Length: 87
Image (tube, one colour):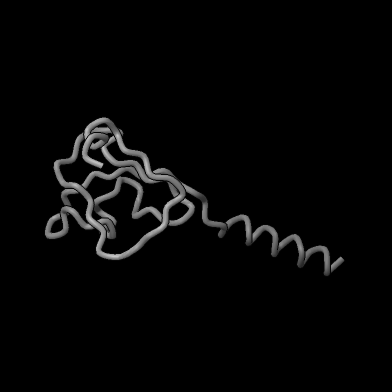
C-alpha cells in the first residue's frame, strides 16, 4: 500500500512540475535590449526554449528585429509576412 502511495505521489509531482511547451511571440522593444533574443521582456510568453514554438512578426508588428549573440534551440521558428523576404 505504501509503495503504491509513493508511486502515485511521485507521478503527481512529475505531472505538476513537468515543463509544458509554449508558443511565444517576439514583441521586442525592451528598454536597453530591444533586439536581444534572450531578454524575457522581448517575448509575450517568455524566452523560447528547446520545447517551444517561437514566432516573429506573426501577430502584431515590432520594428526591433531579434539578434542572437549565442546559439539557441527552439522546437519551431515561424516568420510572419513582415520578415519573410528578409530571411
